[in-house]
Image (tube, rainbow, N blue to C red):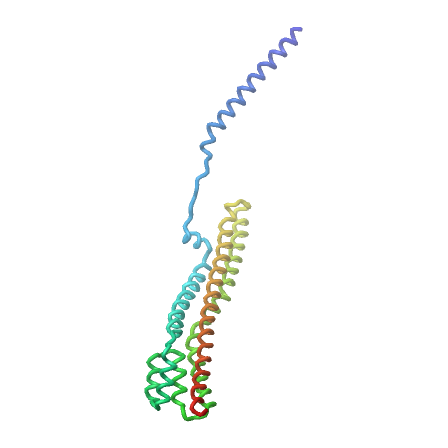
Length: 246
């Protein structure tokens, strides 16, 4: 009977001690909880781009070059696309009055691919229609070629920028495995640098490539529109030459 009472007392003491320990642990956890609040970190766009590795310098040069070509060609094409509503009617009036010199001067003063092509036609009045057409076609092709100057830079940039991004991806993967071998661990701190370089270089290559691709085809579409307008003006001019013979 005495042993039973002693065992019961010991059990009660152990229960009380365990309860006190649990309450102390819970209190400690609650007290320490505010210290575990996550801190928000921000990173600027420039800093993030620089994490892409040395390939980002090449992509930066390609991006700047694409912007320069886009702006420069856009200004040239916009100027060349200006249309003079009185050009064709003025040429027709001067040709009918026999004043070919003033008709040529008018074309040169407008100074657009369309007017320069028409000037070649006016200067060859008196020759066969075939010769006039050939001269105007040659002039038109030269003017379109002048508008397309440096356009290949955008085309090439759109093709090679994603390739440079892929090279940066390979460099990032190599850095990941090098860091793993060096640190002998696969923790996030070990592989984060290589992952940044891998993903940012890939994204940078795609962004530059898409920008150059869109710029190239947008400018090409504007040049094609001007080329079609020049063809229509050529047909109208040749028809005008045939009117007196009807």
